[in-house]
Length: 179
Image (cartoon, rainbow, N blue to C red; front, top):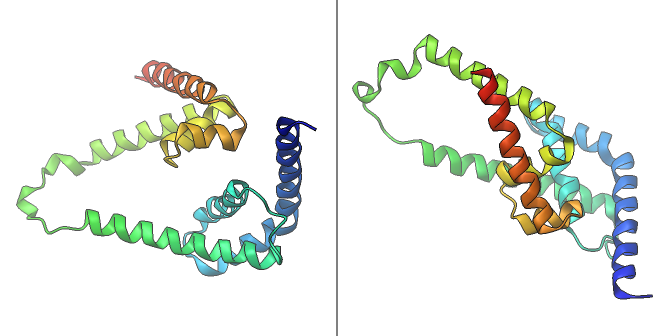
């Protein structure tokens, strides 16, 4: 058997293993996160992050107690989330003089325009082809490198670039049409 075939077979086995783990552990993970975080809208993202970390791990067969490993990963996901939030808040928190704030910055009209723009962006993302949206979200919002996305989704790096370009063009067209 060639190395390429072995890699493909190993990847297929890992996909099957991840799919099986998803069926077995999704509900317990949702319950785990529901008990530990306030923002219920983040639960699905956190569960997804656990499975993403499992996918990134090259081999799962060397894990002795997979259930303990999964919940240890879940605990680490919560810790990492907390660290990121803390760092973000520290970065954003600084003293300010209320007189320095532009009163138009938070006007009701401006807030409404911002909400409408976000709704348009969300609708455009929802209407985007799934693979293109996944590549775009992993790159833009998760901050993954093209090579990481390629490995994760089974694409070539040039394929990832293609989907990113396609996503940007799609969003530009959709958002331009709305204005």
